[in-house]
Length: 94
Length: 442
View 1: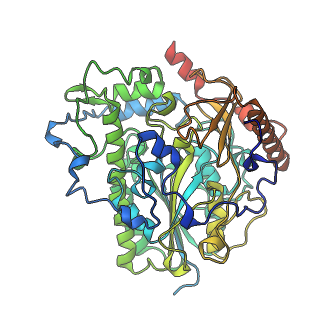
View 2: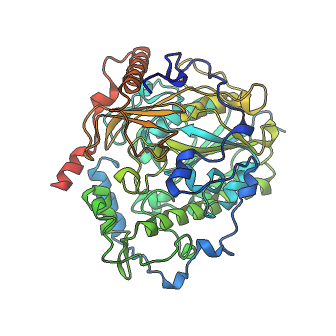
View 3: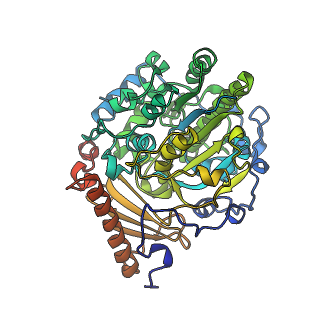
């Protein structure tokens, strides 16, 4: 390519926001990287309510497995202290 | 109806936008948040100009770019200047009763500024981020019912989605499509053990009754279960507002400080790297009495530095001159057409010291120090051809890379000059956690 696209032409940074973006009704539903990442195509919707998820009390088959077949996480009482110690080493916690 | 609205600012730490149904996720992680979105306005392209938690929340509360306020790292040396405008302090001065249901003040002292009330149920835990949405909500709802006599500003900061991912048992079975979570022959997470946070996970919350979790899909399912659990909490908080009869004139803003990498870019279940998985954040605003657009999606670029000016305008407060962000309230109320930024500049200086410049077409990432993953110092991604940011084209498109680098450096210089800085804060701070990482790798 080699030609600088309009979106990166030098210009004011934090001055009045531009109106160059499309109005909401033309906007894609999801960021494109999402569609690419998991390889599905998402239909364009404007109304978020059309995507309302079911209650987990009645989970969709595709979203669940038999819970009893899953291993249980084993969180020991001392694990929180380990996490705190490690994060303190990182400077996350004073 | 009281003149000023109540304001509730909800921060869901580490909540990746595209793991929510209303941002296109195919799994039912967010039934309530999806409903909430159709009662308000959803921002499709909101970005964090600084990550992770401490720099991002500092930006949220100051309305300033991190180059301006100077807090560029999580756990860095920089302190927020006492004279820097701070949202709760300003609202307190405007007659608001201010309340933080939060733990951030335990990390950095400036997060305690301006709160008449600080409620911290995490004191019951060894690790404060283990506090649950139920514990936070119990206190927040009780406070809302009993304390404020006039308009209030509440900040509630949920940690559920942040690692460790330990969702409650009632979420078991959700979002995992089968396989063996603890297959000893699965080595997909082995590289994570080379990172201190990965080693911490291996030594603590990844252990199960069947052995170590080795399947990344299972870890992702645990993350999604935490979102589903958080969704319940946000529903409960919203229901309490309805029950009190104050939902109409309460502006509720839901956002995240940053996303989560999952396994993208060889960064495991963390929030560094300046790719969109970490810097694109959800933002939804609802305010029935404010006549905001409902069920709409806001497409232009916005950023977290816009939060403070927007909330101050909603409260009828004058905006301090020092703010970098811009209110989007006129657009939400329909007084002006939706508008936004042509480009976003953001930064990090915790595990890596880098800047990004993002347009709707390209992302350019510039390192101030080499990173430990071996990435080049300059990366350019074509977001149209490569939305996952997997292919660095800086070498094949040197002119675009050079122009974006020039523009990025110009922005940094401009912000530094405006803030009276003589040294690039990212260069000065450096990757504050990287020494530990190097030691860990031995």
